[in-house]
Length: 340
Image 1 (cartoon, one colour):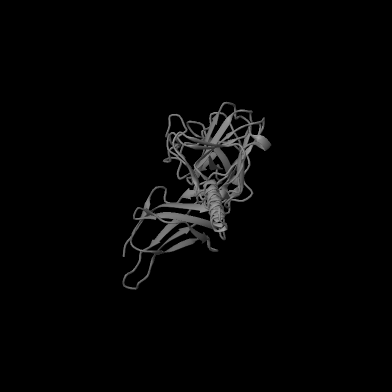
Image 2: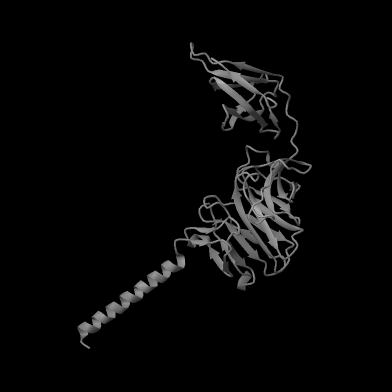
């Protein structure tokens, strides 16, 4: 073999080997991984969620699952380095490889991380699966409940629970053991417009209503604060609730001011009888369209004057005291009609 041919052959081999390594590396990282309906993708070692662009599973019945197999070496499978853009957008199942082996479940929506962590008394060899499901539990289908695709009305409340947040829920699907006594800790969405931190409670759906899983609130009501509770058998979903709310001040009068086209003035609604200097979040509907929450502070005379209104029908006024956590329907189901 001539030197020229040998050199060409050696360069060709090196090039092919380099391309093989490049393809192998790309295959190992990949653009992302999706697990289809009724399928499982199992890991018995530590995996960084940063290694792939996305991690998704089928969410409809029967869902797909990533599986953290806790029976593997060095504590078994776990998914680490989760953030808002690197999380399991779907279901993660943990096979408990040793007694009391907990796990951080870095589940989310694909763009929002909402972790759930298990700890405490956990039987060996059982499986626990969860997923973060965005949206009102009253209308969001739960594919792992019985029957499949059940919903969980946030109006069905056990004694001591005043409300359940419509922001979302964690599906909860244990198999092969009792979960009584398992400690569950979640990272909450922003609850500042829902309730004060001390009144937040982790709640669970027991098949008929939402029940309290904890007796203590969170340190804050802002995003990613931790909220914990103790699991009970029979619970199939977890959400964020609030305890019985303190009484709001009675509104002594509601005065409307119609807008004036001639003088180009806006309409207004004035609420009286409130506690001076208290802060309130107010939400209402205008001609059937729900408006966003607005922040208001009561003046020295105990009034809140809401301005900027045009002619139309205003109803579903919800007034929430952000200092005490109380909430009330201002119009008791009625409406205010402004004309010009």
